Image (tube, rainbow, N blue to C red; front, side, top):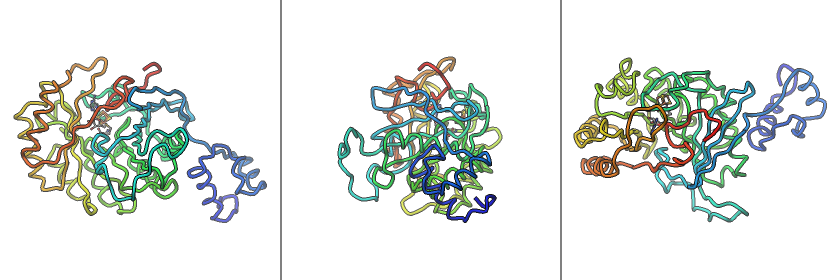
Length: 361
Ligand code: SAH
Ligand code: SF4
């Protein structure tokens, strides 16, 4: 707008059109004078966002979207209606502080009263965790801030979400490692907070443990800092190093030291995600080790247990339900707050780690 000699408030109107009215065509932005729209167009500007090109619907209400960017690269985004904090792993309590819940169905055709959107930050991922399907893609490219925020806008639009009335949580737990695309990821968060209107307290970013990224994250203000989840996934460095090669660069102690620098808001906790791999990370002695490790951090913490979701070409096995329950019980017994994340959309490969770019589910 500045380049076109237009006043700054025109930029605000444009942001309003893209992020609140969710318009995808410059011609529809009638708050801008016709003449300005014409000059924008003639200078080569367009507006738009990544588009949902395929939808996979799960029996549990979860929807997985294949989302296409302007350059034809695709990522996946997931909509989980009725996702509560525990199962979504966003670290929020199922009942929180933003007023009485409004009955579902108050709007025609609306069957949910809250939902969690799982957002991708990169096309593929370079971190190469051995149990994760996204890793198989390698890193194709970073998403831009607009592409990250645009995924959310596309999903909000599809479900006619009224931001501010509907309870929407965002988890940056889709494809990619957000903290290896730090600038674009945080720019997207600022767009989502400032332009879309979602509170950072309703957002959780999950990281595999990128120490410099966590240290930068610790410098962000409360106004734009999402909650933090750390993919611990193993009881010690030996096992973690096998599962997550990144652990050899930044072992558990280094990651915890970085996490300690992140200021927490009132009642906020750090989430430790822990993927249970049958026979590999799900033994009773592992639970004891995890409890000690988490307690030693001295952090207000909670553990999110995730039973591993299988995928083609990955040589692990799912944990036995009894082992999962026993693991949970042992952590709880040690005074650790623990949630068992219910797998969502397993039938459509939308559960954690299953977001591999596919044309057929
Ligand atoms: N790259 C970030 C965020 C995306 S992965 C990270 O790794 O934290 C989100 C979560 O899914 C992580 O906790 C990861 O450990 C978990 N995950 C990956 N593959 C999985 C699988 N096959 N089954 C269950 N959880 C998985
Ligand atoms: Fe990347 Fe996260 Fe998958 Fe690891 S678990 S490969 S960091 S997306």
